Image (cartoon, protein in one colour):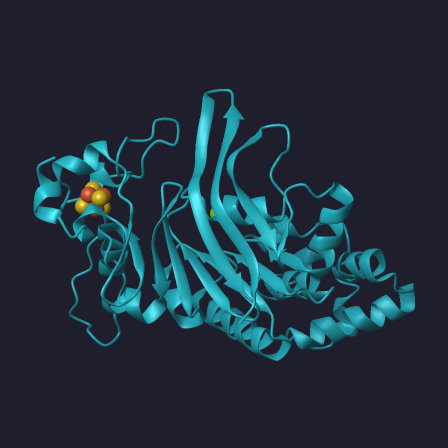
Length: 330
Ligand code: SF4
Ligand code: MG
């Protein structure tokens, strides 16, 4: 399938009062038309920053783009004007944010918030926009949508608010939907319903979805391919089954070891010892080095390159180096 989004070597940092904060380093990823791709990692690993950079939602005054390119449908978009980006954000790509309570405006009715995108980007009249908004609410599984249009966010449950946000994101039929931790604020039952909704919308609309989550279990249910991020870098990527069956990077192995497995109820869950590095003081060499139980001498000094594994996915870890015995002592 044709590549819709192509990000190459994207490095982003922020100017802060404490100094320069490194958010992503050399992130390379792509999304094909119509596919669902996952980005997984702990909070602060650069998942959301990458998505926000693509949609140019990062604060212009404090964001430093040190390297990289972002290509949309074959065109480099970093040079786009704000007007061109507005057009892209409205019609081509959209985002569902993590917390529906803060992403929705509490003082505007649901109807006026959904209408905004429709009148702005599709130039619909008020009554046409109302009809379309009701149709969108119905599509995301909200009953009596005409009544809901007049309600305010606080009158709806968390799950319903998330459905409203999805409806808003769908308003202009985007070709790519970023879903940034769309179920983190929801209970387990509602989470399952929202994931099912995203899955059916993706299939019906043939839309590409980038699902951002700290939960590998959520990614596994939804995605064909996954990018595992750690401390601003993509450390492993490939088909979900291959990464579940044979995780190559010790960080991915740690994520999987901390995941409950319904088929093996006696599985002992283990967390990853230590903490993610301070983004102001990144370790040299492999960024996972301070937490890695398999670390070797070389890991502390040299950044590991990507190696392709036996199951055809890629991971950045010195353990995969064919001359591993030699590496260990460098
Ligand atoms: Fe661990 Fe070294 Fe691999 Fe990094 S490169 S994950 S420190 S073994
Ligand atoms: Mg985030």
